[in-house]
Length: 140
Image 1 (cartoon, rainbow, N blue to C red):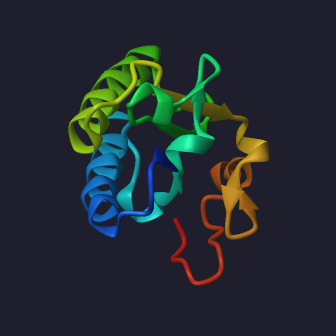
Image 2 (tube, rainbow, N blue to C red):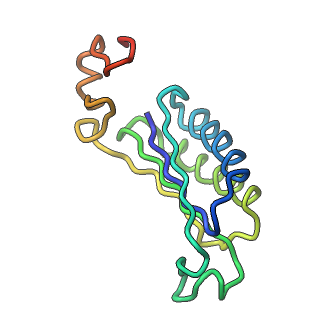
C-alpha cells in the first residue's frame, strides 16, 4: 500500500499531472510489486523561485526538478527492486518533465508495519489479522 508524494517544479499543470500519475503508479506497482487498488498518489507543484539546489533557485539554474517519495512497509521490497525503481522512475520523470536537474531525487521510505497503515488499521495488524478490513473495504 504505497503512498506516493511527487513534488514537481513549476506552476500546476493538470495535463502533466494526468500523464505522470499513471506512469508512476504503474512503475511503483510493477517494479516494487504493489497493488494498484491500494496505491495513493499526491502531486504538488513548487514554483521555480522557491526550489533551491546548491543555494541557487531553479529559476537561476534554468532547470526543472522533482522529488518523488514512496512510502512502503519495511522489508517488502529488495534492494534490487528499489534500485531498479530509482532508475526507471528517474528516467520516466526526466522524460515527462524535461530539462531536469541531476539532483532531482527519489526517496523510498521503508516504514515499520506497526507505524504505517490506512483506514485506521496498521499494516502489522492487517498481517496478523488478515480477516480485518478497513471501513468500506472487503476482508483480505
